[in-house]
Image 1 (tube, rainbow, N blue to C red):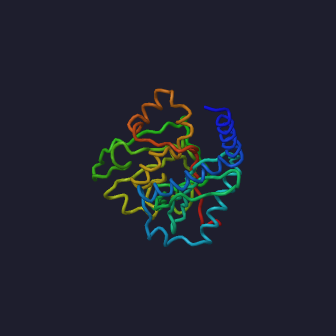
Image 2 (cartoon, rainbow, N blue to C red; image 1 turned 90 degrees about the vertical axis):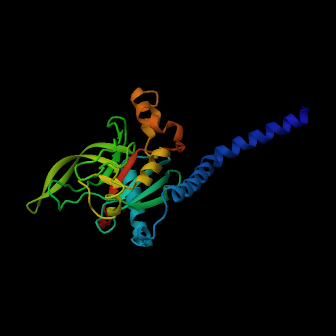
Image 3 (tube, helix red, strand yellow; image 1 turned 180 degrees about the vertical axis):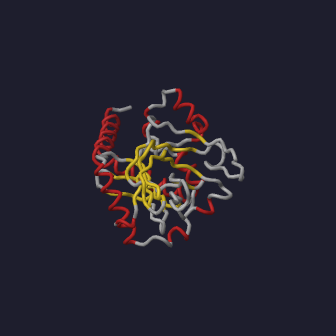
Length: 265
C-alpha cells in the first residue's frame, strides 16, 4: 500500500475517532433506541386501549416525575429503566431510555399492568419510589405451576421474576391504612386469567405485566445492569442460562423500577 493511501486511511480513522468522541455515544444511543422501539412494536405491540388513557399533559407529568426521581437517586449515566403509574385509573407501564447528557427520557414502549388491590383481604398498596434491581435480591424464573384454581401466578414456565427486595407499604384494614412490609416483585401473570385483567388493580402488591413484555425485558436485559456486571458468578449464569443463547443485551442496561402515582401530580 502506498504512503499516500496509508496517510489517507490514517486520516479517515482519526476522523472517525474524533467524530465518535464528540457525537458517537449520542448517535449510537439514538440508533439503538430507534431499534428498540421497533423491537417493542414487533414483540409486544401497541394497543389502542393503552393509548386511550394517555394525552400530552399526562405524558408531561410522567416525564417530569420520572426525571425528578432519577435526579434524587443520583443517576448520571445513560440507561434504560421502567416506570409504573399505580393510579387505578391508569395502571400503565413505560419503558424509557434516560439520555443523561440531555437530561431527557425517550419512550420505548408502554402497556397495561396491575398493581396492588387494597380492597381485597391481605392485599397491599403497591409502594411508590425508585427501586433497584441487583443481585443482592436475587431474581428467579417461574416454574409455571398452577394453584388449585388453575392459576399460574408468575406466568408460564421460565418467565422472569425481578426481585426488588423488602419494601414498606400499606394495607387498608378496617378502613384505615396500616404499615406493612412486602417483597416487591415485577413479574408476568397467568396468560389465560391474569392478562385479560391487566389495566386495573389486581395484584397482592407486586407489579404484574404481560408475558410478551416479560420476554422483552428479559431478552434485551433492560434491568440487568448488575447481573451483566456479575456474569462470572455461577448463580447469575444459572439464572440467565435458559436465555443465554437468546439474549441481545442493550448497550446501556439499567437497574431501576420507578413507581409513581399520577393522582399526585
